[in-house]
Image (cartoon, rainbow, N blue to C red):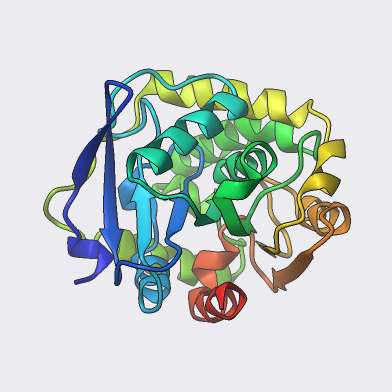
Length: 275
């Protein structure tokens, strides 16, 4: 089985149905994926999920109010983290690894701080610390990309996730094609209400205080492109500087979606780290 045909499942979390898909051999410490602004299950790169699932039990889910999950999306990263923890506990796990991309990277930081015993290792991609440079501008960057996409007939991810070079744009085309490999049982699309709540949460995170990062002693692997337009790359260096047990990987000629552009390298680095 691959992520492109993994069945969607649902679990009751405090009276709210949370939708998820899982892949890989069960047992050991599962890897829970935490997603980005505007994303649903079908926005995960199947090559990354399949690559991780070659050695791990991998779980991707829609947090509260996202995609086909029920409830209303909260407007703070802390509340999103609490919902993610409730989902993880509902599945019966007492220890997980986390992979947080962008907004998911913010959520992963909060989970590691608030529930340190629940977490073994953390991967943070295309993200940044609370109060990070340019984080509060993410909504404006998104709006600008949507306008450019409308004018050019491209997808916003061409502008948000990939560099504007020939290599970057070819990688964007390939990534968007991979996202279409799943043809049946596609997720519900994101609602405007959810996007609004996520943007409010991201803006507040951008005004936050990163001082508690020094309390996260878990091993953390940080990855990004060298020119991230959504969570400026300097934030990945700042995470690596503030986290006591961090390693950093920066991909060349890449933007916010560097892990998708360089998925073979990223998957290998992530597998090595999780070992």
